[in-house]
Amino acid sequence: MKKILIIGASGFLGSKIFAYLKSQVDYSVNGTYHKNKLFDELEKFDQTDIKEVKRLMAEEYDIIIHTAGIVNSLFCEKHAELAENIHVGGIKNICRYLPKTSKLVYFSSDYVFDGKKTDGYDEDSIKHPLNVYGMCKSMAEDVVLESDRNLVIRVPLIYGFNKWNNKYMNKFSRKELRIQSNIRTNPIFINDIFENILDLIQYSGIIHLGGPEVITKEQLYSRTARLFKLPSKLIEDDKASKIKVNKPINSIVLSTRHRLKLRLISEAFDIMQRQKRAAE
Image 1 (tube, rainbow, N blue to C red):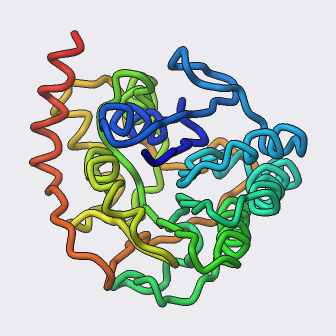
Image 2 (cartoon, rainbow, N blue to C red):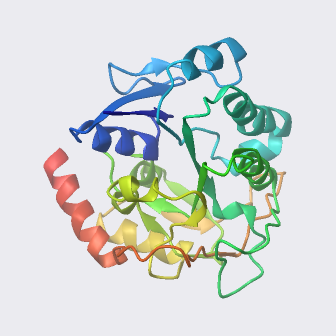
Image 3 (cartoon, rainbow, N blue to C red):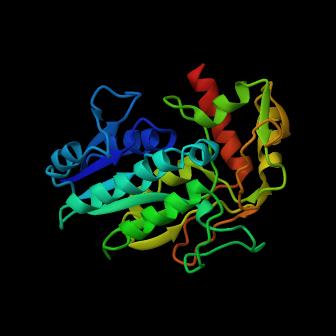
């Protein structure tokens, strides 16, 4: 029986992967959290603490899936040293003590690109991050890929419903939701990630996982708010902050390595509506 560890199993993505893999009979699955313990069996973990890293890596997991980190790009811009310490320093710690028999699967971001290409980026595209978050993810990727057996999965904006950590839907509870209206992306439905995770971890190197439709962030959020009758008013980003975060305008990740059938946004919304009704 293979042993799998999810680092960041209380996060929006990590919790879904953790719950899905726990339902699979052929795997022994453990997970970590940093602040918010969503599941009783999760273990508290700080990847910047060498002692904690050495202890966890001594368990010799077959697969370690890393979904943890600071995803708020404005916070990273304001706290660059902290962001680098967590994203890059933490990954260096893990890779330093990663057993030779273990494989690290690292979730990365479309923010490693500059967004100048209107037709998107595939796995062979040259990286050129525009902000601190993107630079940290890019540097962490380089560390992960020092081993040929490891895998980097780059994803764009992730949307979906999550009864444990409903990060995507919860943002619409705000009176005003700030967005940069001209950003184009091919958002990925969260179910399409965790339902395909066992196929994805068979790869090594770099793989992109983006949805089949290109849409602006404003269009996606508007459709979400209308469909679920959510109160948020969408307004242009960066009006209130003194620190401007440069973001890739075309956050489109394409793959030449897989042929997974991924859901259209309308199909994903149908599933989200059923999930929301079931949770009420």
